[in-house]
Amino acid sequence: MSGPDKRQHARNSISLTGILRAGNAADASAGGCEIQDLSVGGVRIALAAPMDVPTAVVLEIGQFGSYAAEVAWADYPVFGLRFKESPETMVEMITAVALHA
Image (tube, rainbow, N blue to C red; front, side, top):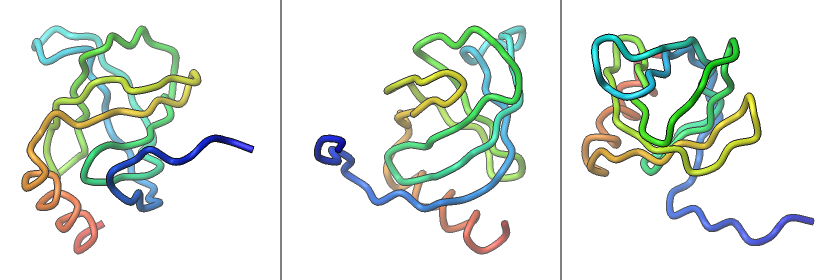
């Protein structure tokens, strides 16, 4: 049995594709990923192919934008990311995903 859930925000199961960038430089390494669940505070992703993942990343979610995040936990190839964006920004993105995805 696992310990208590320490998340501040409820997660919603979802299936979207995204791109994980190793930082926000134009030449940063990047790889495809599947977004498995999403909340105002973070996201769980699974990498489509091996890549080195630093602590600071940018997650591109198609037409919904790019969001700065940090790795909260890793169980390769699955990662939990904590968004660095404001909760208001993330609520707007999640609402757009819910309406259009």
